[in-house]
Image (cartoon, rainbow, N blue to C red; front, side, top):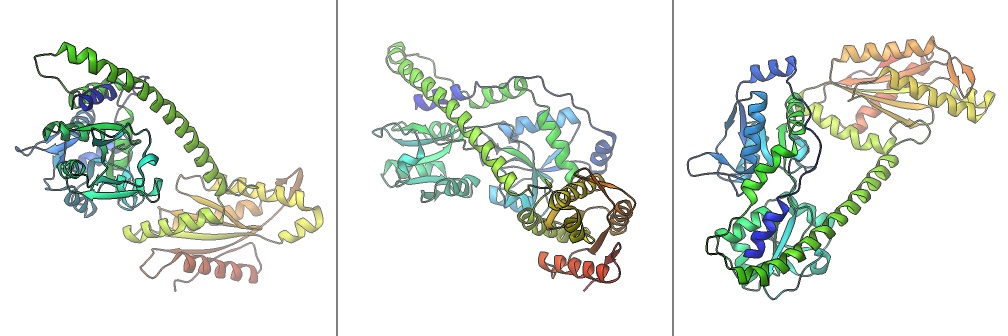
Length: 473
């Protein structure tokens, strides 16, 4: 028990350096918030000490302290939506009965409903075992053992993806998990350091111990309804404005464990100091491992990004389009937004290669990609080299009329420009086929691409250097 308490104190002391960015709401943001009125807040009602709803119906814990600080900073009124379980909170938030969730971990499934800020705290995971178990340095050591974990937590899926074959047993409470460990039904109980320490104390558990780390277990962020993206941008800026000096007192107040009076100095020198030294060594090892993992994640992210880029033009490739188009189609269908899919083809491109050679042809493709980037510069505009001399432009938001006008202006610009293709000036034209719709349930990525391709075929058959819009089927 004392070991767990000491661990909580140690991990609550880390903070990063750097001054907080200045924060002020923009006029459009203030007008948006004033029009909305109080923001409805959903929380986990039983996740101490991170957050809970107490007997008086108040939101308390780390999440409550952070939300109070941010709401005061921006002059935002929050209204708590009472719930009896995390599942009920998630259901209400998905039904748009809540505007935001105070503590939630980003997952691919949740991104269908929410935008997420950056995590505002990070609490390592630990494993609790019987006292006779040796130190666990890595979960890989115990993958064959049954391990308890709280039901419904996002870390269930994360751990199963990270450690294929891991034997996770979901339980409804930490107390249930501890009892199964005591009875030998589970090798250990997994959880974030703060919740595990609180549960050990609250249940008076003295015959179990924290046997080691279990990775970056909990990195909560603020989740906001993604049908109102401005709300997500506001809270991302608010979270970014938090300084280490503001975060640390919250962590210290909620995570630090105080010992009762009647200090046992013999126990301290004989037991606590060796534990402290061991934990400091473990902490140093954990920091080193975390840095290595960060480098590996960065390398993997760069590799994944490069696999989705066309090496010649730097635009997205077919793989990137196959990932993005279904997600954008789903988003537009759910929110009644327009979606424009345009197939752009360079006219008579074979003649360029035949007359000037492939290096000039490659230069022409790079020049066309640069023109596309200059014409379609919004953050949500997606540009893809579909294959050969064919490109796809995917536009969401705005109106269909604006998108068609933008595509027509691009076609006219290319027709009147002289492109530099590897030092050779070329005058090219493009044909464009467009499918522009407000998607319905029957629309699929394949149908949208086929319709745009059919319209492109018509544009070429009618003489090229023109834009043709596909009829709504």
